[in-house]
Image (cartoon, rainbow, N blue to C red; front, side, top):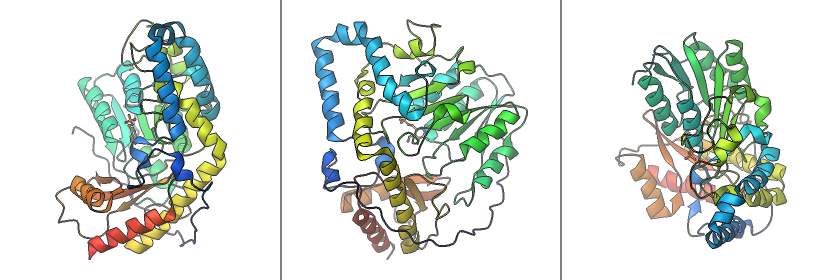
Length: 407
Ligand SMILES: Cc1ncc(COP(=O)(O)O)c(C=O)c1O
């Protein structure tokens, strides 16, 4: 990797006092049966690909039947009207004007759309913290190195004790060669919630654009995209909004929209962001048409209640498992640096497993627990997710299975 070396900032002392926290009350009885998930599996991995309630799957089936009955009508004559209608609740929920965003298939595509649209010169740098998602890392490296520039991955602490640490990482790494800073709103391997507003302010003062990768943010935290002040924001709708796989968006600030195109150039080149992203060649647009159904399902539970439930569960899980496993919390126990994902260094000796996949497979095959294990710079992390269908006993079981494994 031709990354520039940057020293890791000193970790600030851990001062968080232990808090007592209880699991949330379920939002409604029998909520798990709303979902398509197999009850034989303890599903603690909403984070990877989301999951969908039955009503969303049924809505998708209806759209597919309609498309297959009248393909030209849906994908050609009615497309613009349908997509305008599909964008409305997304824009309202996430604070985006319809002309400033378009649907994409996933966050990786959103990142590619922007980075492939920008032109980089030899000497330019693309900067991101080391909590970056690997597919995004590869995209950044590939495109900047192709232009003769440098990919800079700033070593970023984990565990992390305060937002200041994360702001300092970026402050130290910025320089006059930095063309763009890409920040995960909520990091994939570590679940850390980045102080994106502060980082955007810092970068703007230096005249550097910020791209927020919000793959996990929509539906996990309250979000008002346009007020953040980023140049670009991509987010998934198929994770925490629970839309069908293939639903995501890319928002671009009005002053940056010129020259930003989807990765697939098609009929509506240079006709504006919304027009270009509404047609990216023949593809299945039904996941986009079902986002409204997913939003309606969660809205009926109460958005604030959903966010509070999942966050409270995550805080409780953090306390429960860090104490049980003796690993110490990876972020402050007050929950200020997490949403609904919590990562822990895997406790105990993992030498009997060749790699994280083998450990994952052991938990899945032997105990029917679906949970991801990541290799984070040589450290194995286990990451829990909390969604409305999860119950405290699932995490208690995970805690015991891992303890037994350490014996
Ligand atoms: C931070 C981050 N960025 C990008 C992605 C990629 O999302 P997708 O597979 O929907 O493109 C993920 C997936 O988990 C992620 O966590």
